[in-house]
Length: 114
Image (tube, rainbow, N blue to C red; front, side, top):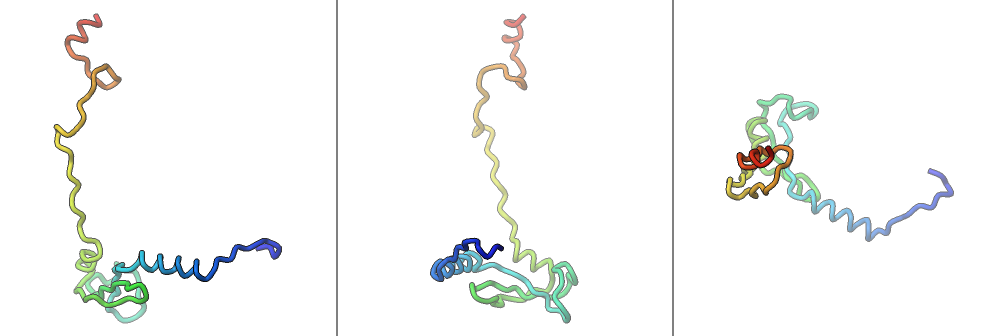
């Protein structure tokens, strides 16, 4: 950065407001930590190892529970979403009159065009 460039410094109050907003958004986020010896590696390593479920309180990770393996930890972190309801046939808008590119002309229209 150039020394003669004008830098915008935000006030401490603005920074604190942004920090609290960020903390509030991430509050309640869940995470897992494997209960294995050594450094923590990818979550897929040692899938049979027990894991600690932790929740972010906005300031620190708080232990919520312990699960026996990766599959159950994923089920807690990523619960299945309810299926989307499809519109019933009568809920769809009716096709309007006309002969667009992908519409099959009716018998009356075919006779009229001949």
